[in-house]
Picture 1 (cartoon, rainbow, N blue to C red):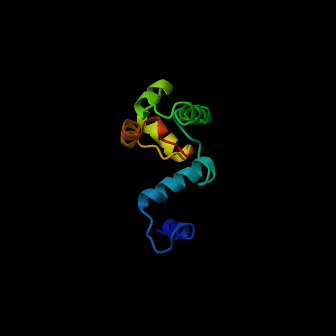
Picture 2: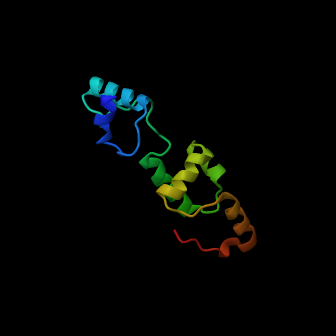
Picture 3: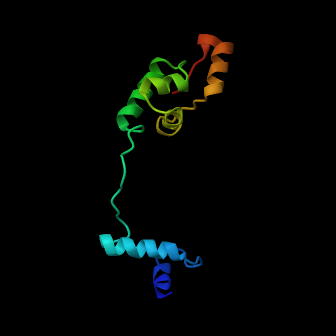
Length: 114
């Protein structure tokens, strides 16, 4: 119980820390000497690399009509990862269903604001 009280200063004072959180933090402190920096395990994320983000941005500028699924196959990433790259990293308002509808109705007269 005293460990919980000591750790409350680091976290929200009104919340009670779960015993699993305390156990996890004290274990990290014993193993690594700090609770702030922990080594990361597992494979690095390769789908959202800066190289892929630049390639996707260039691809969208060259061929804005290409759907997310076809572009995902082109870059060998999942369509979810590609959609996240387009919306968060490239800051492009890009929607799969909306895009196909726009090109059917507006054709090549559509202007994109990238």
